[in-house]
Image (tube, rainbow over all chains, first blue to last red; front, side, top):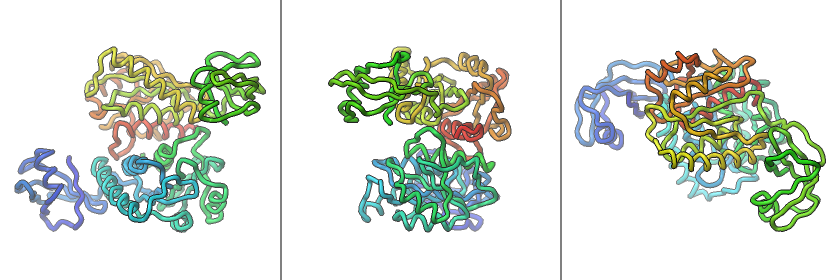
Length: 239
Length: 239
């Protein structure tokens, strides 16, 4: 059933306008009487279309229930900025795989170092991609793509999670040796193409993060977050 | 250390020509005395460059050992042909994540149905991509991209593995409920954009394959194989 996110709690009926209304009418060719799911902050509202015009769709709520597709973990991906448009790819796939929040950051070996204006434009675009992926994959929330931060700020945010993994290509234990048992707010820190400097790895350890490995094969910086997310999801019964 | 695949067992010394020689000299700017790894069928040969010209590099073998990067599982990915160039992406990532063989196949809902000539050209290109990904990720073998087959032939090949998972969006158990315990040759079957028909799912079950789920979130056809591979690798201690 088609899913759309809404930004306010529906009060028996909901009026959709803008892109959602156009999409329902033109792309999906839905009609009066068809059913769809409107989703807000983890709750799915099952609705029926009552009336529709070219730019407005009115639905009534049939029933609501908690979205069953959200993982028990609240995973934040801290991703060092990769080159080109790889971040778009990472965000799309991370949202599909159940990530709850993405925090881009700049580390020592990042080649991509956009200025503040360009970053803010990118953030807007990334948020759109997260929303599209959330709709497509049946998520109950739209994961937030946060403002890009520097390495030190990222460490502070990661250390504030219940636990965070610092994925380092030169060391660390497998996730199977240090799974997130009972923790809910979990962070994963992934480097850019050049990985992390030894100083950064040391700073992460000093901040209390767990140094972790994704195995002996060298993963590209856009493959690593997907492997780590999949591994955490399966290890915690969320896949 | 740079890695190259060779196609014959080295006899004390090895002569590299063609692309490898050019890459060593021009791109990597290596010199006489530099060390590299030559790899063949799971064995790493640690070598030193003795002489080099613009199109030939001669190395002597210092020592050899089994490549430590190969997983204990021999995983075959049976992938229904997706649209566009997604197959290239899937092959690159699957090789990084430890897949041993990729068998493309055509299922009922495949939109992409290239003719034999086009498929053979694609296969060549895909094999090149597998080789590049194997080098980059430090694999001990070059995973083979096999000839594309039809659904029935794919089922036969999958059933000949020690065990095979048929990933079906409309059912099946989590991999955690049916992990590959002790099995070495494992198959994973992933659909194209439209997934599988109920008849195909039934045929897979009748062929003795395990129907499996990748969780409640809907994964794109290019995300699913990476999630499944990562999950199998972590569940079997290979990540």
